[in-house]
Amino acid sequence: MGNVNRGLLAVGSDRSPSRAREDYVKAIYQLGAGGPVRAAALARYLNVSRVSVSKAKRLLEADGLLDREREPSQPLRLSRRGRRLAIAMVRRHRLLETFFHRVLRIPLERVHAEAERIEHVISDDVAMRIATLLGRPQRDPHGHPIPYDDDLRTEKPLPTLAALRAGDRANVISLDDRDDAAVAVLADGGLLPGARIVVQRSDASCVVVRRGKRVVTLRRAHAAMVRIGA
Image (cartoon, rainbow, N blue to C red; front, side, top):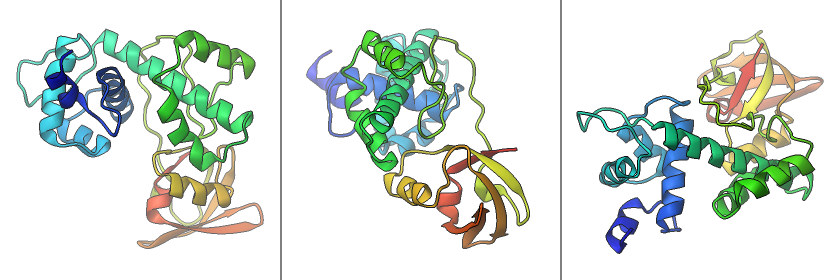
């Protein structure tokens, strides 16, 4: 791929086309929970322009990573090959996060950024060796499932703590991990996967929850990062 294509696919500070491809397909897979994604939503998610996404779309289609759509305005949909690559990147990322947190004792709020830097340079073989070393964990430290095959099942988004009302009870299933400072706040409050919580108050400004004997007050934006289940 020439210099022009490298510029079109640039995401973040690393301008290598292979990393950009991997970032795009992973973002489409995660943002769309395995389904199609609108270009505007992808641009916001990756913090790039709509023009960059449109140009990248054509290049990803040419690489066979996106299905070709008849109309340019149609959502971006990963091809079978694109979804396999996306799942492989998700696997590497979540295994790295687990290794960093369990073995190296890196704080939870730092593991996402560290994994983002390294996931592009390790092989699938190394990723699976990490999995074996860790005892083949099923979830990363944020509570997200770790895929061990190329199963193309769709991951349905879970409801968030922000949607609950006073008196509701729930289990914390996972934390959205893209805001390191917010993850630090949630970890400090003990709102980690497996925690059992009771909502004491929920209004336009905050959500107050009780976890055991501890009461934690969260901004609504932080509560929206906490995925819950019954």
